[in-house]
Amino acid sequence: MQSLVLTRDGLQVADTPITPLMPGDVRIEVRSVGISGTDLAIWKGDLDAPLPIILGREIAGVIHESSVPEFAPGAMVTTEVDLACGRCWYCKKTLKHLCLTKQTLGFTVDGGMREYLSVPADLIHLLPDGVDMLAGTFVEPLASAIQTQIDSPVERGESVLVIGSGKLGLLISQIYDATGADVLLLDRNRYQLGIGRQLGLTHTINTEETDWKKAVLEATSGAGPALVVEATGTPDGFTMALEIVRSRGAIALKSMHGHDVQINATEIVNREIRVVGTSRGPYSKALDMLSKGRIEVNRLVSKQFTLEDGSKAFEHANQPDVTKVLVNI
Ligand SMILES: [Zn+2]
Image 1 (tube, helix red, strand yellow):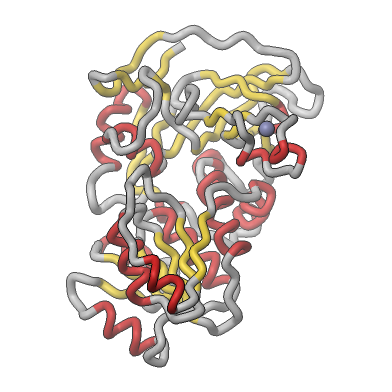
Image 2 (tube, rainbow, N blue to C red; image 1 turned 90 degrees about the vertical axis):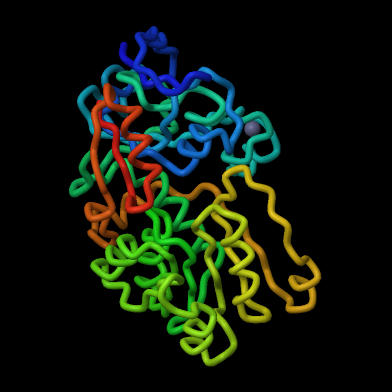
């Protein structure tokens, strides 16, 4: 089968063997894969992964072959990405994504940018009515965005500052907006902020055009937001979050993409700030929100590429005026 393989020399399409179907597994014929921030970080060398590796964790496709009756060939599906042991302390607490010996598709083992992918059936989720292949590639990041809101809820009318208007920031902003929070979306990218406004996020702040601190403080009675979500995956975003969050407020971190961050921990103590990390989330809730049309994803897709043009897809995804890039197989 054709696969997009990342080697020390970059991305290349290669012929790789199809993994045999093990008992309890389902083989997906992959149709579309989103390029995630993690994929980009590995490709750029910011995040270590064993090379060669097939990237891709935002996966949608159809069942090609199945060893379990619940999943018939032809069904449209997506898959979770953590392969857990099922026996350790975390697995027994149903926290499989924190499994002590977990493997993650597209990070520690081969991911979805290939024609066929076999995974344990318990990772598979059927795409409900109203969720097509394109939307199916958003389930993984949307689930993670939903978990951020579950872990760091705010009351109706409370202020949430989302730093970063890329795909994740736009998903998170929509989720908090749907719960009645007052969302402030901040970035320096005019194109992405424009998409945010198209999605109904009325309060956007461009750091290149305005004094962002002044703008945020004016919008939050001078005290700062109750919650800041860092969705840029950069140390600078974390530093900004700590500068502006209200005392007794919270900072939600999505990913640091392997970056070390130097922070003033005394400030966290003295201003009584909570810092909450979130990595994975509930696929069932993400699928439910997508099927009910509560989250808009079509406008977040900047461009689609074929697997043969996978290398160009990554180059494109690394440009500033981009939200999400798909690789179709
Ligand atoms: Zn485990």
